[in-house]
Image 1 (cartoon, rainbow, N blue to C red):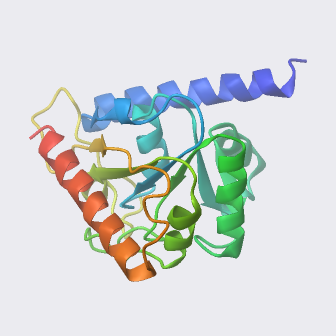
Image 2 (image 1 turned 45 degrees about the vertical axis):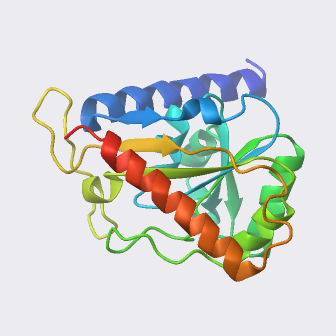
Length: 221
C-alpha cells in the first residue's frame, strides 16, 4: 500500500490536470500574472468569488499548490472529502469567522500559499459583494506577501442559482461563459499594519476589482 503522501500527491496531480484540461477545453481558460506568486514561503491570495469553480480555477493557474477554506459540510462524503483534502481544502464551519482565521494563520505558519474569498460566499448577481470585516484582521496581521486576484466569466458559466455549469468550448466561437484569471502585483508584508479596517477593506476591494477587470480583458471574446 503506498504511503499517504504518495496517494495525496497522485490525487492532487490527477485532480489538477483534470481541472486544467477541463477548464482549458471546456471554458477557454486563460491566466496571467502567475509569476507574481512566490514559488516558496507563505503567501496569501485574495480573490472575488463567482462560482463553485473558483478554488480549482485559481489553483490551475498558480505555480504551486494552494490551501483554501471549505465549508465542513463538503466533507460529509468520504470520497469527495479525500479528493478536496488532497487538493488543499481545509474544513471550517464558517467562512471568515474565528475558526477560519485560525486556519489561515496556521497554514501561513506552515509556509503554505493560502487562498481566501473575502466576500465570504459566491456572488448572487455577478457583482462583487462587500468584503467581510474579518479579512481585515488577516491582512493586517499577515507577515507575508498578499496577492489580489480576479476571475471573470465564472459567474456566467455557473451562477449559484444554476444546478450545473454551461460550457464554452475552445473549439467553438467564444461566448460570455469563457473564463480567465489574473494574479495581481504582490502587496508587501506589513502594508496594512497601520491602516484602520475601513481603509483596508477599501484598498483591498479596489485591488481585487482591478484584477477582475484585467481578467475580463484577458477572456477569449
